[in-house]
Amino acid sequence: MAQIQFSDDTITALATPPGSGAISVIRISGPDSFSVTDKIFRGKGRVANADSHTILYGKILSSRSEVIDDVLVSVFRNPNSFTGEDSVEISTHGSPLISQKIIALLLEYNIRLAEPGEFTRRAFMNGKLDLSQAEAVLDVINARTSASLKGARNQLDGLLSIKVKLLRDSLINASSLVELELDFSEEDVEFVDLSALRTRIIDIKTEIEKLISSYSIGKVVRDGINVALVGKPNVGKSSLLNYMVKEARAIVSEIPGTTRDIISEEVTYNGFLFKLFDTAGIRLTDDFVEKEGVIRSREAIKRADVVLFINDVVSGFSLALYNELVSISDEERIVTVINKVDLNLRIDTKGDAFISALTGEGIDDLFNLMKEKTIGSDVYSEKSAVVTNIRHYNALVKTTENLERALDSLDEKLSGEFISVDLRNAESSLGEIIGEVTTDDILNNIFANFCIGK
Ligand SMILES: Nc1nc2c(ncn2[C@@H]2O[C@H](COP(=O)(O)OP(=O)(O)OP(=O)(O)O)[C@@H](O)[C@H]2O)c(=O)[nH]1
Ligand SMILES: [Mg+2]
Image (cartoon, rainbow, N blue to C red; front, side):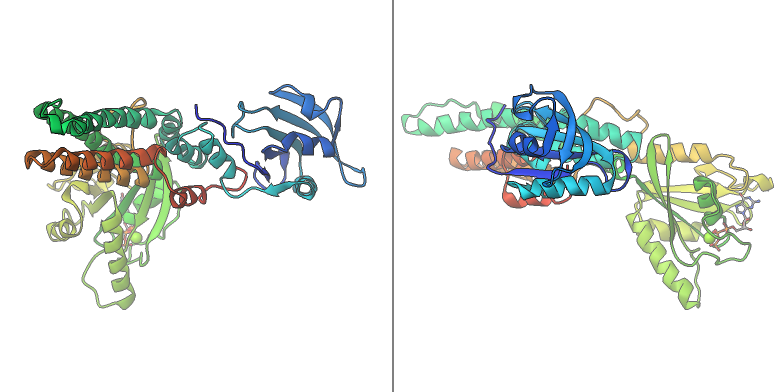
């Protein structure tokens, strides 16, 4: 564990959501946490004398000695706190007025308001969490489905960190071998078996590529599956959206061209988030508004993880439109749906899913098919490291590029110095993920996304 880097100032913020509730919690962290709390708190004992992880009951008094509220004060002594510093949590009745008054009172002493994410940033600086774990704190808070929560929990538990650390250690090992050889290069001895070094770099690269490819899953696990509902007018796109979200969200009518703009809704199915985009029916048209709708449909198709290409049993599979879709999107993402099977018109048509947006027939299967397309048929693994964060993804890509360069240098029989630089670069891009290598810019960027109090 890293040395605690004691901040020279003490910060405070409301840790619970603003507004009324059963209780509110005010967080304080830093060297003056105990002494300042003692100045405004009257209870049986003094915070300064309390053991870590104990709770004191008492009252918070204003500067004119009026009771602001009766509270519970939780005491955390360094290094055993979230931030690693001396910290206090004051639980009050859940009135925004009370918490405002107490925070204003604290600010009269040598305490300042925390910046967004500053508590977590201090936890990172003190080695309580590495950077990917600190980011996971935000993902845990923001998770909206059980799958995204699981992914964030895994990251917070260090699944990704452990994997990255192992790979980084093995890289460090490889580059120190190369450097050792450089040190003795005058003496014409060979420490490094070049083909063994090559194999080692390739092994590391393969592992990193596995992590990179997990991002396509990680992204949809975290952010949801983007689904575009497209097809000719009147095939039942809006009816399907309404059925999926279980409300009459989009206008449905027998008149072709009902939907002009994109209507989006979100729905959770089996722990996964689906973001549905109902689009205007695609056809050649002179109507300007509808044309604009068609342009927007194209954009939604490009962004989609899954394109539901909807047809109905009345007019059958539209090959012309399918071909058009293939030119916009990846064929692998397209799911051909045949709707209105309740009409019992037995037409011979191909499709991946046969449904009725009227009765709901086949719609569960359709959800499962979409999940399979994006996440794979394996049960989303609870135990594997999955990359869910674009920053991590970019760092991994940069790492493989550096490894690629090292392999080229090896192949070209360049001097060890070149290989060593490439390996060091790979090491440092990998280190960015867990924050072994970092800059203020990176940190500011990350913690700016947090709320104040976290
Ligand atoms: N029998 C039957 N009718 C359906 C089904 N789905 C939709 N319809 C009917 O088909 C017509 C068109 O439905 P919409 O959902 O508005 O079709 P759309 O594809 O959104 O049409 P546009 O927005 O005009 O492109 C309506 O009269 C719906 O009631 C279905 O599964 N079975
Ligand atoms: Mg519609």
